Length: 179
Image 1 (spheres, helix red, strand yellow):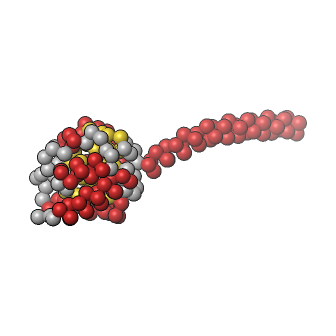
Image 2 (image 1 turned 180 degrees about the horizontal axis):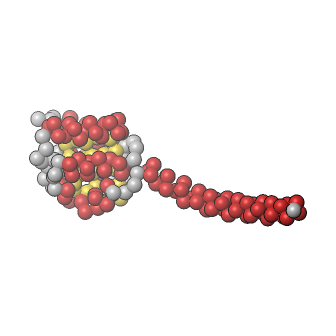
Image 3 (image 1 turned 90 degrees about the horizontal axis):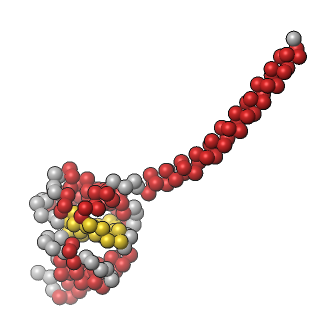
């Protein structure tokens, strides 16, 4: 049993974390073994190091921490047993993908991913799948570079075609004069 001081410390720490986090995802963890949760945490640690955490926290403490961090509309997520994933460093979408795929691999009902906040914007359980299917930041950067590069590549191709045609014409004139 936690003492009042320990609870206050947990609420204070969680409030500070929630103020600077890019993702908060609430999930129902019932039915998972300790080994399952350890596996999920190791997947997150492998990708993020200390930049992401998946913790089981009492709803009353989460409620106080979220209220102190000035979040609104989170009450629906704090029904039943709740674990919280938060990301302080790195791509938050990748963390959602990891948790989503973990639940999918374990054949757990995906509606148990309750929803949360991405960059301060609330999302619901129905939107978790859409977020998990978003491309990562690196993929988005690659798409952007490809789109910026395409017109330049096209221009170079057209200009080289004009020069190539000019060379063909000059060669034809040279051959005609040499006959």
